[in-house]
Image (tube, rainbow, N blue to C red; front, side, top):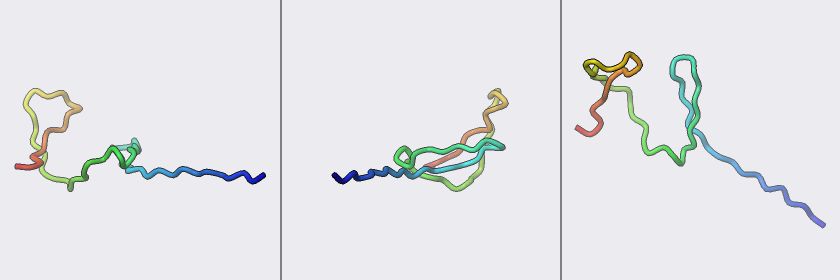
Length: 56
């Protein structure tokens, strides 16, 4: 009797925010953008860096 070993592999997008490392399944990723200008939002909490203009 033969036993076949099935191995599943997955691809992940990894990125770092300050000292934290994160990984997201590439199936969940729609696009990756280049770093661009960030516009500050008045009265926003300190953890919110701002917003970006994605499509104009």
